[in-house]
Image (cartoon, rainbow, N blue to C red; front, side, top):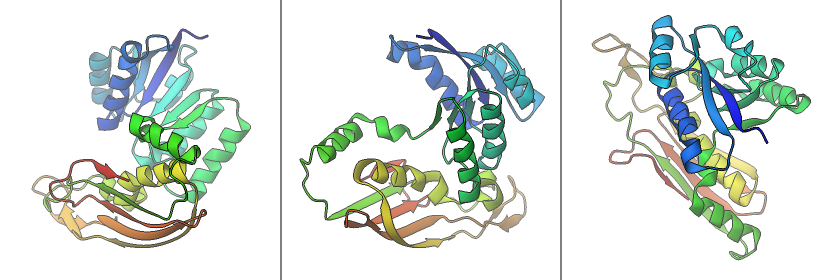
Length: 265
């Protein structure tokens, strides 16, 4: 068994820091598992790369993805970039023979996702997505009960993921509010987790009817800046039918005042 795994982190924003902290915690949480070693980091600017190096203790900090992929002491790439960069990072990492751990969503759209999945199927590495809620003990127990038939026939379901992070109309624009960079709003930020959990627990979707809305249509381009259009959804409501005949509702919102990562199934 490999005792240590060299990690190359691509992207050092909020999610990049979360991944780095989580890798560092593995030896404490899972003593018998291979230990991740934070070898290198790619950031958008030289200044942020140097800050990452100082904070994370990386051997190398750079703005060049190819420099990171060329290192033999890096076996796995953790992709923590904005969504529009996932395709480039993942295709390059797989072509370089690296294992990949990618933050959700996989890609901007279905075409990109299929291209990535096709290369993964033809390659020999280990490729995984950050769907961490699958490993919550309650979810693991729920999956066991469903698979054992303890719950019997499923008639209906309700699933919500609520967040209040965008209720302030003066919160400035970011890549998460731009369709070209994010691929969607609440559905890509929050909904992908709920959709994954439903598929993981009770099966595939047969039909979906959804309504999405952008409730705050303009936000400041930056602190104190002019208002610019928002072209992603703030919330989504859907009715769905699963292959097993169960019907239910889904709700994803980034405008749920008072909520903070409120995920309920």
